[in-house]
Image (cartoon, rainbow, N blue to C red; front, top):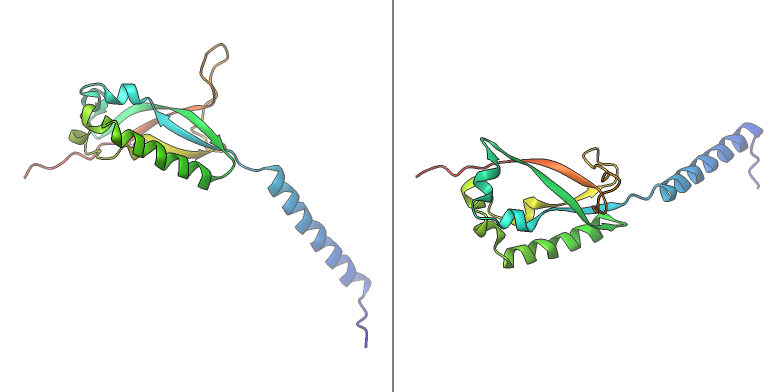
Length: 146
């Protein structure tokens, strides 16, 4: 026994199928770009950089610049972990005196950020900066005296 559909049911099914296809097309058309944003390791490694950049309970603003762009957050995070491991080997936290500010890992100086993040700024034309930048205020985590 075949099931007969009314004209209203067929219109509803066609509308739902069209809406579903539109969502798929929009999702593909707006594939996000993810940026690996990181602070300047030379500036972070300067002696007493943590003290110089500290302003009470905040640090910065710290300028982050794009170090790469990726088609997914997972790809970006994978590279971020490699980046942070490399910085650990370079001991930027120790050399910059960041432990006095309560920062014990370089991971706070590298972030994966979506291209829709409102903190991203385009580099001014006429500069040699490639990719977006962003300024970040970090929270100091001062250690308590024992």
